[in-house]
Image (cartoon, rainbow over all chains, first blue to last red):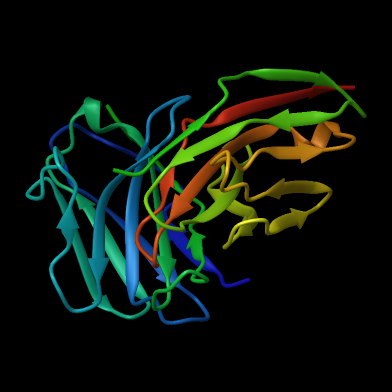
Length: 117
Length: 111
């Protein structure tokens, strides 16, 4: 299947700093990318949906000024956690899909474990 | 809105035991249904999917049948292995929109 590369896989940062996470589709053009957050032993919660060249659509309760999403090209989306705090520590996962329709498959990155100290 | 409910874990089995993880969904129309697997410290991998009623998805010995009459997509495997230990997520999607996930079920297989 298609490959989605997410980088970094782990990051530790100091409280108050910003962290950028990259999500790349390596062998296909991702018209839509999704960013999820997963708390320990819990399911994935959708944070935002981004379409190439347009502003991301954020889910209710997700601060768009804190979680900046950029989808500048068909193969790259970035999530920047600004002014990170310990409560932002989590596992962040991106997924990418091409087009739409019932048979469209979403491919997931490996995830990024963010620890804010 | 759409929702997915799956059995809570952890599910602990001995190697070669039969596995069933229940999943039911709520959605209008005809969603696509998926099972994803997450191994420790990794992202999600698609395990299998079904896009219409009565379809059976299968992969690596796992199977699930799309049952519209019971709005279910239960995951089964006849003989589990230690390497199957992971968290399994049931999910649905409609017309290419985002995935709605169930809460996840942790499977632990003991040798």
